[in-house]
Amino acid sequence: MPASDQGTSSDRYTLIPRTLIFLTRGDFILLLRGGSHKRLWANQYNGIGGHIERGEDILTAARRELSEETGLAIEDLWLCGVITVDVGERPGILIFVLRGELDQDASLAEGRLVASPEGSLEWVSVSQVYNLPLVEDLPTLLPRVLAARRNCALIFAQYAYHEDRLLIKFSDSPNPL
Image (cartoon, rainbow, N blue to C red):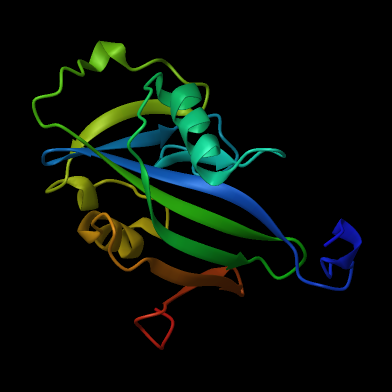
């Protein structure tokens, strides 16, 4: 089928693809605390990730973003969720959520993580993560991500904004939170 038959047109909803990666090591999760200079999510904790560039598949983009933002080369990542974000205008955002589990005994000293212009990296105890200033969707998304297992059902979510408030609906919950 030629590209012209793919059904793309300017009147259809378009999405910008991004990755969001969560690495765990035993009872710790690697999070990025956004730099104080950042326009979005300054001093707030989030997973690692970014845009999928033209010509990249999801996994390649996730590995690239992980390497760029952490210095880590983790091959064993898996898709655990897909989130569509309706920002009220075109284009929207499509987030592919990936997980990786590192061996609890893995030798990953803090010093191995590279500095990132995005912010500082921290291995945070899962028991303490909800006491941190998290980006607004993480208190709802993170428990599902941490419960996700390889080869299990994916997390599906729809985010939308209403009067500058983020509404989150997971496929397993019919009502927005």
